[in-house]
Amino acid sequence: MMTHLSSASRLPARVRLHAYDRANLKPGIVHIGLGAFHRAHQAVFTERALEAEFGPWGIVAVNLRSADPVDALEAQDGLYCVITRSEKGDQCELIGATVGWICAARDKARVLAALADPATCVVTMTVSEKAYGLDPATGGLDDNHPAVVADVKMPHAPVGVLGFLVEGLALRRAAGVAPFAVLCCDNLPSNGKVVRRLVLEMAQRRDPALASWIAEEGAFPCSMVDRIVPAATDATRARAKALLGTEDALALETEPFLQWVIEDRFVSGRPRWEAGGAILVENVEPYEKMKLRLLNGTHTLLAHLGILSGLDYIREVMAVPDLSAKARAHMEEVASTLDPVPGIDLSDYITALLLRFSNPTIDHRNLQIALDTSQKLPQRLLSPALDALEKGEEGAATAYAVGVWMAAVKKRGDCEDPRRAEILEAAAVMNATDPSAAFFAIPGLFPPELVAARRWRDQVNDAIGAF
Image (cartoon, rainbow, N blue to C red; front, side):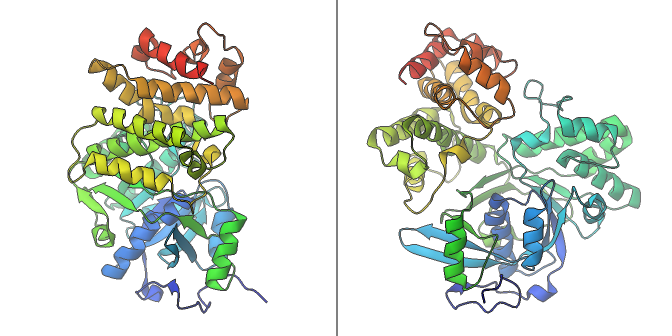
């Protein structure tokens, strides 16, 4: 009879096991957002840091809404496997760095207790761009975001990530405990600075003294994260069962590449993530901009080219020479908008990205990458477009990618996006003369400089017309 993975499981020798005494692992990190990316990225770095230098750096994993991954983690004693896939074969690693698991919707008090615990030194987050309640027009809080509205109204019973951070910090201040460092791992430009502003703004609304304390004593390091992690499928779980000899409901598949660049600005200690391969720097911005514009921006382009071509996976898009050529052309043009990146040769980086996108063992769905595109456009495509225009360039690559997105929405007749209704309405009224006009009329979606850039918009229309 097949059983589920647990601490009692006897696993085959081919499975890489943690090289530390998990029984003595104490919590020191709270992570908010128990998704696949965290489990294949920050948890893996923490696992390896613990192997290099053991310490009280166990992870308490918090999911804000769904209890399913929390219950699955509890059933497996906090264990799961990460399968690294490439043409060289599959490698399986057991991850045991998670020592606690809480569904916030079910037990706010436990989450707040974990945040207030003096042992908690770092709070990491992967909740997606849309969860922060960021107003892209102002860079501050979006007063219409449901979580922001709720957390401003009832700060002691938070529902959103910002509300939990502010209430957790308030509890620590009241108890005379130093703040934790807030380490955002989502794909937001200058993510630490963005989250710091949002946290301070929410704290200011409830207690200016609290906001001053956070500003003076807290830390919000920026970070850049990079690993392609497709959504797990039944095939993933079947592969894990074959490798482990037991069921793993939380098994993940990912690529060999793994990168985490972190500003070394902490207040109460941290794991030696650099011993696990992380890069600790003074300034993350050049790395972050490179990754957002070259990897993420090209991913958005490829995903929508795939949707237009009736293809399911990024690797299938890359197998079409004309489409893979568009990926390279996009990156080579956008690279001109980047600052020098210490230790990185951009030509080599682009070549490596093309190989990663082409990995024949990774089933990264185009529809997964296309989720919430309106939230991703500013950092992936619109910022490099503005930089190109400011330099006197045409910004043809970014215009093409934006037009491909609009054409894909039109062809599919649907999208999964927080602004879905407005986007579908714009697609429905496309006309042959100026097909992008209704998209550019969506309030706050495009910066005024691009709305006014007629030549750039004409190139968007040319891209739409090609499909």
